[in-house]
Length: 191
Image (cartoon, rainbow, N blue to C red):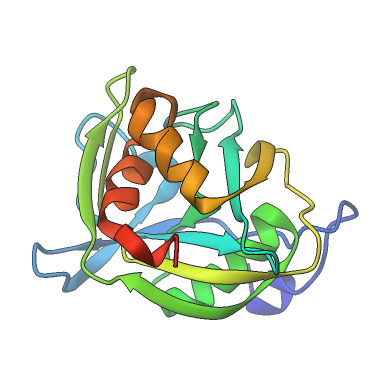
């Protein structure tokens, strides 16, 4: 799909996403190639690039999202604001902008890296593996949340300190990457 097509907006206000792929990488993060996203998440998922983004509103509340039931990995699980995979031709920051519009219907500003070297591997109950080099970003929301139901089934704004306490008390209720990221973020989330 040409880039011009990406600028068209669906009737529900979400920017469509071209056929997705992930960028596979070596252990040191060197880009190796691409793999169709629809086929990459299996019991033998190769190491690939991703990102996680934690979005705050003007009141300092953190946006949490519950993954749509149609998601291949961790369906219905509460997680950070949004995640995604950069395409071969885009920077992580460009990917974050694209995914914010597609998944949540808003723009982000004040984008900054919070945990540059985050990496994890996790296996969900169905045996599907996530295996990602996944820098963690913080951002501010511009506009109201208008979730794409293909991506997000629920969302909630919460005080960051309350989120940290909830993750520590009930880690099983959140995505495994969020549990690890909350620990890695430390005071960056609650300052």
